[in-house]
View 1 (cartoon, rainbow, N blue to C red):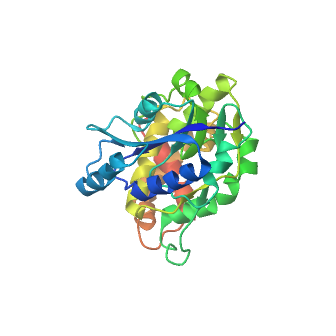
View 2: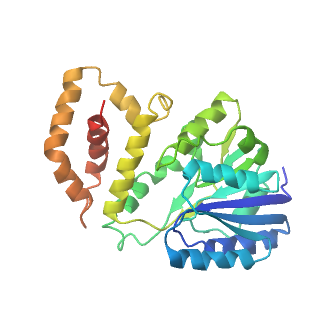
Length: 296
């Protein structure tokens, strides 16, 4: 497969996308392809970010479109797919970084006819980020997300941060726009592809994950994601390790005991995770307790 035309789609919310877009332009020009880059702002509130991102609209083959109100992570991706001109589209999260000079060319020559997931690589200075829970968590899980490992469970381990897909597939199998808040829209999309017998190929073509939120912000996002997971627990059964663990606790008394412990110790664990010295081993414990404590 040799791709000659490509739409690069970047959904964003309060993220500066100028450098990411510029780096992608350089690689697209070097590859001598017909291309477009569309940055879709989903209701950003940071005026300075909006002002700087607006410059993208002045560049050749680039568009910056704004959604005044936040429509959600799934809906903004569906809008981008509809806006795209070309049959192949590349979705990239706006907080990612180009880390390889041959990033685009690897996708353009990839051997697949439907969906390709390139993965991520975790960047940053380990010493400077030793206090950062998101960095510690992503780094600890990095070996589980190599292309070889992802290919073992290609649908469950699919992520939207960096993937190539035919536009026709996106239009016939859009993201579920009920997913307005953080988390799991990519997991359900992977399940939809499996149900439709559409193959996902995982390759080693990562984009850099080098920007990390504060510990309190990460915990808030985690809690939001767990609420999303709970809301869609029936549809995501078999695609979430946490749901599998929870469903394996068959004795109601055990669940009640975990909830009691979480009520007592949950605030202390959360305080540690939000602190400058988070204990990464407490993170999964907190997730289990929080999920079980949601209104049943």
